[in-house]
Image 1 (cartoon, rainbow, N blue to C red):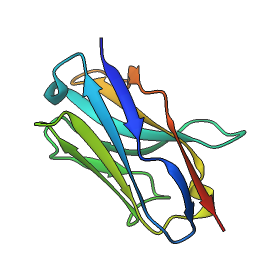
Image 2: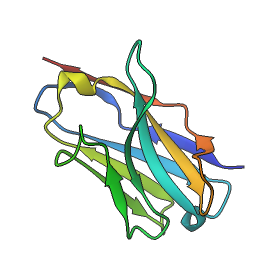
Image 3: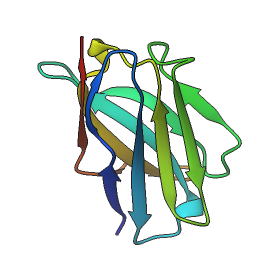
Length: 119
């Protein structure tokens, strides 16, 4: 089955940047759409960004548009989230997720990586 391992989280000051990475294994990476979600304390998990299997289509939550950028490398089986101009409200656990092409939901999840933005 699919295994997803996130890395790159940490503590950063407001206005700073972080780059999250997610390593994919267990299946054919190029058959999966990939996404990033986040969950802040006391809140529901929310969508952040997604990229389709071919990297031809990207989507972003309104709250991160213009600040975050999702990318994937099908040769290295990785998906990245570049986060710039970070705000304290971006503080959350960030999860990498995979959705088999044609499926309706993201069915594979990583364990999450903590991002903390100080004011």
